[in-house]
Image 1 (spheres, rainbow, N blue to C red):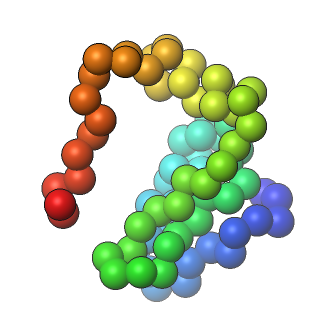
Image 2 (tube, rainbow, N blue to C red; image 1 turned 120 degrees about the vertical axis):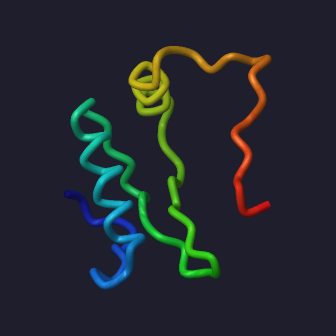
Length: 78
């Protein structure tokens, strides 16, 4: 693990989500150094910035290039 955005408190459920996502990405050889937690309400997971190589690896792990005509995922809290 690299020095990056601090992880949330272990008492916070967001900690579990961040760690699960880090582990899932690591299985594909992907590291998002700025992956962390936004301390707003409701708590959000920060995915952060990444370089082009990481973005390509993430797209490949998710099943290929994003479809331009597919609508963006909507949050249920909207």
